Image (cartoon, rainbow, N blue to C red; front, side, top):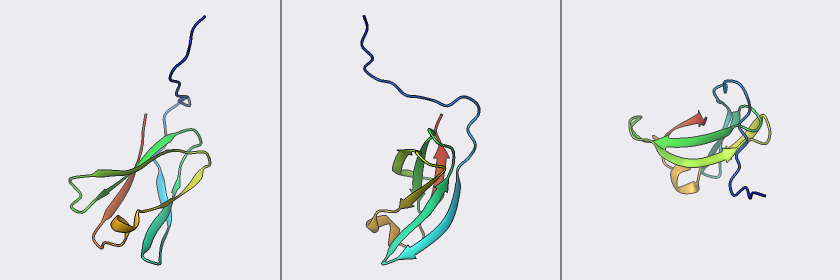
Length: 88
């Protein structure tokens, strides 16, 4: 008998990079869609200088297109850059 305390499914094969699409701004909220692969883990990061990045969100994709809306504090500022990374 054994007990599994932590389990993480990782799909086989090399992960494809995420693609950011359908950028929107409404009511001072900034967002976009992340196109990727189901069961892959992605992290969205923000930066004001393209050198120092802060994780804004990490999520497991349950669909090939996942919506993302920036927190109001970050999204309302101008000069914020975003990127999405596919985690191993």
